[in-house]
Image (cartoon, rainbow, N blue to C red; front, side, top):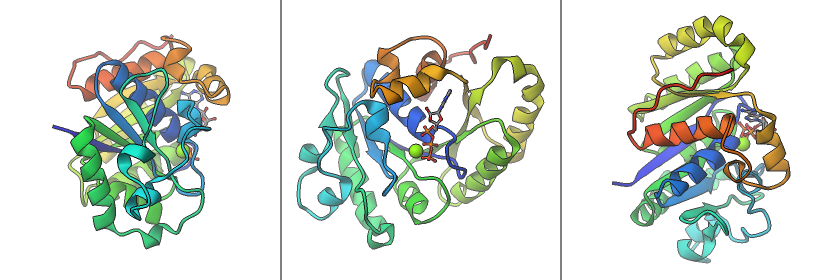
Length: 246
Ligand SMILES: Nc1ncnc2c1ncn2[C@@H]1O[C@H](COP(=O)(O)OP(=O)(O)OP(=O)(O)O)[C@@H](O)[C@H]1O
Ligand SMILES: [Mg+2]
């Protein structure tokens, strides 16, 4: 059965787009058919993280308006098989898109792909609601700082209205600080009542790969790339221990 996952956070800049690109590519490399949808209308950059910026010409509003088919608008990755991107428009009022329209689009995508990952915008406004309305489950990405963790908890409270399966990923964890952070992360999970899907280390390769418009997993299989692979495996139902950060 196909699954639609929204990647969200509340606070901006926690690593949603990096995670969406990396986990999607890992799922595809592990054999699933994956469609990423950039739902960050106006500030889209999933195309950069996937290395597809000059290829995505039609966006999801073109499909919604019937100007082109999903098959035409979804851009296949040139290197990673089974990985495609449906990009966001540069400008468009999210309020003009209805939940039933969005749900119909995601339903159509689920008929063709095993996983549909939606990269949501920062904040809890109309763009967030649109990204959440068609999701089966959510990944909430937080960094270790208190404000991001608190925003993650607020996000979870809202998500609980419509979703049962919500997971937490703690990103940009500095290995040296991990022992001291354990208590903070545990507290955040307890308060939000969330299962931890993964811990991703601080890794300059995440930014370097995005700047070079190269998929992270095509540059390295260590550090953050390995953490994202483990997250993909857990989504597939495999038991993978949390990685040891050094
Ligand atoms: N594990 C990591 N290690 C180092 N840098 C990271 C890591 N994860 C993300 N970054 C960097 O943090 C910045 C923000 O990441 P990203 O764009 O993925 O966040 P976002 O949550 O999608 O932001 P926004 O809310 O603006 O959409 C980028 O420069 C990215 O390269
Ligand atoms: Mg983003």
